[in-house]
Image (cartoon, rainbow, N blue to C red):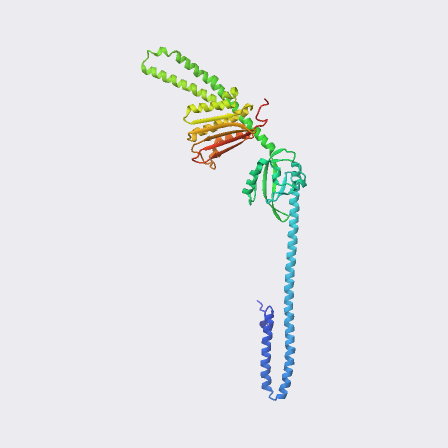
Length: 446
């Protein structure tokens, strides 16, 4: 192990020279010089004449020594400053190179993302979340929606939506404000007026030094049509199966039960001589058989109400209400007005099933005393309102999501491009509002 030897000068010299250290060294050297030289001259020279001469030489020597010392100290201090400046300059160069590299990476990243943005086959745009104005759109959006880039940049995201969707859009934008990402399905309108269904994905993005939002819009119109066609097929298949079972019950089991009842009625007079106990058993059997005939008739009617084919939706619903009125203590009120509106049979069946399910749920679960049903057409909208004064339930609970009946109601209304809304508060009853736009898809040509 080698030991480094320090000189006295190195031991006394501070590692870093500062203005304070230079002044301190100068003060120490000056004090020692004056004290030691005065003591030496006073000790060796007692004659005032020579002493004065030596005092002069001592002052000149002091000036020379201190000047050389100050020069050396200042030069050393300058050297330290130069080293420090070089280090600072080196750090600045490193920082500049790093910043330049980061800027290059950022430019490359922006170029890559701009390329992905511009060449993406899905419509994309960037909008200002404060003003809702379009900031940038890609070529796919221009081609798909029919607006030019200049037209887009003079519009807001409200301008590509139907007027009826604006309140819901504003509510949604308020709710998702500040969220990192969100996705929803919306209805958009092209320049030529074509209405399309889109799936929206949105997220924050920094663009040109500002915080905007990036949107990707996927056109799912054909997908929604295919889903609706599939639902229609499933529902039509269900109705065909209901009709088949109803026919089997009515023409098969119902006829056998009716024939059995006629045979038993034919021998009623012949059992008069039997013991009273046997007569009662026979009468109970007849009563049960007649109840089975009635129940079979009710099941067949519920599966496929003939009143729809014979008299139409309004009278079929009235027959349903009359049947429920006879079988329970609930007070019903029913009013309808669909005069002059000829609906397709499948449309009538779907509406009937929804009303049937709603009334059935109210009878079974609401514990209500009154049920009100209104069915009418106003401003080219079929509206159905079903209200009860029962116990209600919590809409936010999982009951709505689990109930097959409610899901079936929603599915049927979706296939008709309608809306259904459930409103309920525990203890304050429940209301169901159904709105169905009258279009060529649901009405006949008559």
